[in-house]
Image 1 (tube, rainbow, N blue to C red):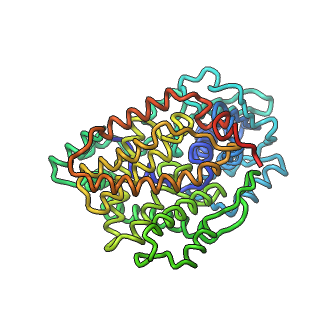
Image 2 (cartoon, rainbow, N blue to C red):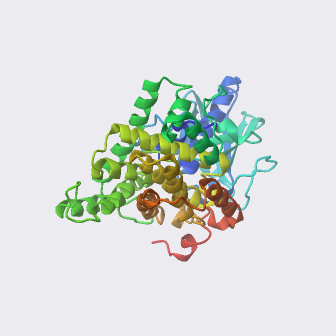
Image 3 (cartoon, one colour):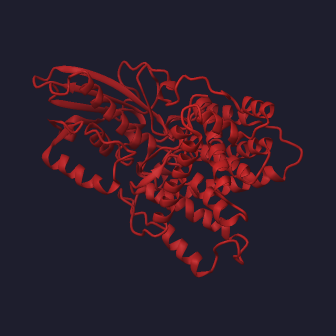
Length: 466
């Protein structure tokens, strides 16, 4: 186990963790490398080349915007979404940007930011991942000072070409008390220690942080997620990007309020699921608008985990912060298994690696919050993924709007059902979570690349943009 809770759940901005947050981090890391190696002052120009999925859907995912901001030294975790448009307008009008906020250089997008849609991988790259970006720093005479290639591997994680993917993880090399590498190991360790899965995850997190800091950090993540839900439920209008998709969460919430379909006393037995839909859509509308979100484990799937957490808080009798802590730490333990044994990148394995993984995480987390056994948690997580296997990533126009927003709502509802199935089962199950994780990854590798975040097939091809 190399991935921390705080690696999976990262505060950032929309619309995409792999196509916005990852490229922003890569651009900043390249600019920082120039600074640290005393090349910043010699740099007169930087050229960025996008390949594969980054090139094919980068405009719809805001990759161009992210690169400009990253080169200027901006970080997704601290960037105020309200300031983005003004900063981009200044760069584009002046055709200048300030590397790391220090060195002004010329930057004209048609020349310096290239979407190489016909090439899957950067030339000479050792790593084979469809989210590649190459940066080239040039001096005043046009001589190359340095060129570096990075890959955005999902969830905002990046690696430099040739690096082991584990280089993206923040957890240091200190030995963990419970270094599980599979669900089977996780269950065995928990059984031998007499602990719940969430307690294993907490113990591992406490290697790098004090327990009070971990608990506070987890609840801060929840507060940011819940704030995103609240903003999404009151904000109306048209989402950016040209599809003219109208935000629906606010209107849906208004209708549910008008019907009195709220809280545990609602007369409609299915009202809680209506609210799960609203919660998930609210988050992903905020994400599509470039607002503040938390990767869970990605931006494209950011609505599932918070929607189910809000379902627990609002509709489960006796829900409390202790239950939310169990929920999030268990969700993270499950997410780690996918991140380290498969993929959470839609460009690599399709949407099963994003919404499917989020559904699995939320199902297991909800079971833990409700006091399920470790075996029931594992079963719920397995069901959550089993019924998302093979799901493609085919966003219309390269925008995380159709089918992404509704898909999060469906994933959240599936997570609730998966939890209920697992907790009502008494005789175990045939498929293990490890088997389903492996199946998901192999299915993703078999999937044609045009169904993996390229907007070249599926709904993206067969629905007319309007």
